[in-house]
Image (tube, rainbow, N blue to C red; front, side):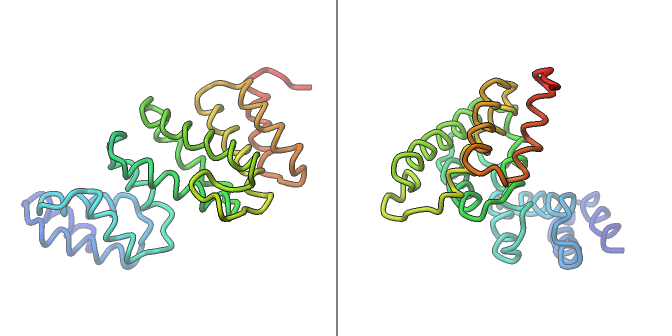
Length: 200
């Protein structure tokens, strides 16, 4: 019922009511992208930016995996918040070994300026992890060896998304050499080898 009410309020331009309806819907299904975007659209008509609307929802739903991606989508590549958010999420994913993190960034690979920022963050942190076992902006905080493994893994996905399959294979192989038991890397490697027509 609230879904129909939200759509009706949108069609009538009743943005306060639409916002309230989407808030109610998100109480029941917090990870519904359509409802999140509907809420953000209503907030935008009420004078907020989409980034502000997403950030408000993130405070209410700290465990959300979808909202951080939507926040990044709403930011321009020139906005310093884009690089800062990518960097923070990268470090968190490395520390927790979150296999799905980098695949969720695929939506940004149509924007060359965002890809360039992502690549700079990946390469800078890989260099730091290889030389000092720390992230580039946290030189006093040593990381577990799995962070380096995951850095290789993410650069494998990065080059895969850029269709640079030979480079992707180099990093996937480094990940395998570092930690042969990391099973998610074999999924990536299989995808790379298929693109390279290397079936043996």
